[in-house]
Image (cartoon, rainbow, N blue to C red; front, side, top):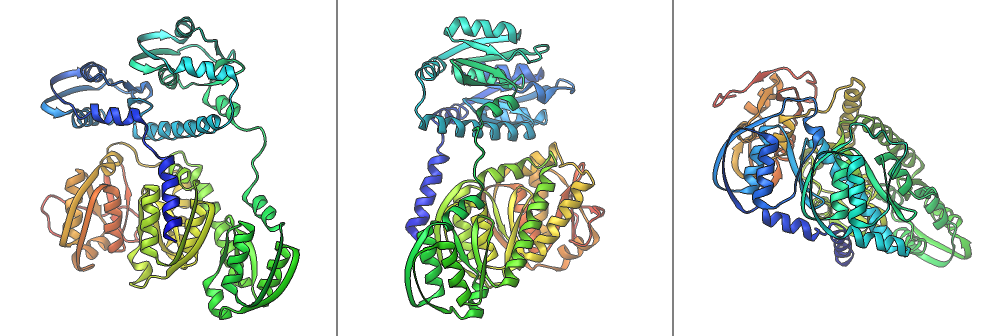
Length: 564
């Protein structure tokens, strides 16, 4: 089991390996700087940083569109550049990310979108590198690998393209259907590869490019995505399972435990098959005596499960074996989950949710044998770098051991099956995976669906930025009220408590001991509130804390030092 877990971790670590340019940027932003900005335009402040550090810094023009141009008043001496930059962008209610050999400054929402798009592009290029490319593509990639230094100031795109053609001797074609008006480039890059410089230039005017028919073809992201997509529709997971079950199989089971029989069929078919432990208790691990030769695996499976008075169904990328009643229940819950997530994904604000879906699309192979749920979740959290929170009231001090073998399965379905077998479920909440009982997760999904139907936008601005701040602390025998007050001061935000939440903080939960290292503040807040069976929502200017039955965000704001 450990070998399989380590193999999965190594495979995913290779996928997430940090590129060399990112390590170089991280080193550069540790340099110390001194400056005294007095009503300095934000663009000039960034230009100063770029000149001083020789780090490519790019300001998203969309981030300031429709806003008054921010000015910076700030004085620092011998401060690490990274901290100074954080302070400067915070003054403009912006943030930054290391992206494609540059420091990109924009809104949190635009940063999340840019990071996701860049990850998708890298995956497409990785697949392209695995395939044999024609000579003309290799020649263009060699040109795009050249290092360039240039500066454009409000230069029309139609003038930039001929300059790059003259510089590289490449054919660069603008989509004739493009609206070329108001596409002006303001960009300064230093010793950046031409490929990255070109991508940044096009990002700033909402365009992209692809190598096509011996040239660099420039168009809208939507058209480029369509050009990059394979022309043949990928097979669904149901199709893949059906093909696996169509293989021929031979075996001779004599008083073979049902668990061993299912494990054998899983190995032979290379399809993920999960036996419901609840059905197993009912069937007392019924021994199987059956001999077949060159039989279609699906027919053999039907005969095996029938001997135990069970049945099977294709659900969430797996063959699930259980009682007919349990199969109907699990299938119904899966349909409800997919409908709820489809409804939530229609809302533009759920960027973090879409990012998690990309992570959970990774293929993994692992095996847990009688592994405590908390250990299994800790392994997956390390594997994915995604925050996972186990509701302490979901297990009530008793953890179901997990026995599960997943082979080349998307991480999302594999994780959900792990929880299903323990009668638990999960949902996306406040930037993390929240694991709890079926009833509580159902309530969370209903609330989110109602929120989306009412057209409630995901909160933006200062509150989101404050709760994304990474913090480290250690609580020892601290009350919930004291812990929440610490987080309130750490984040620098208002907190409004409902009457029920105030009562919980006064009289409930006992004391808390918790150690956190470099974790987003929102994750710590969510965890603390779970201990008191409380929830929160983000309003226009405050964090509203309330009991599950108190949906209206009304209550009393806590002032500094005010007791509960």
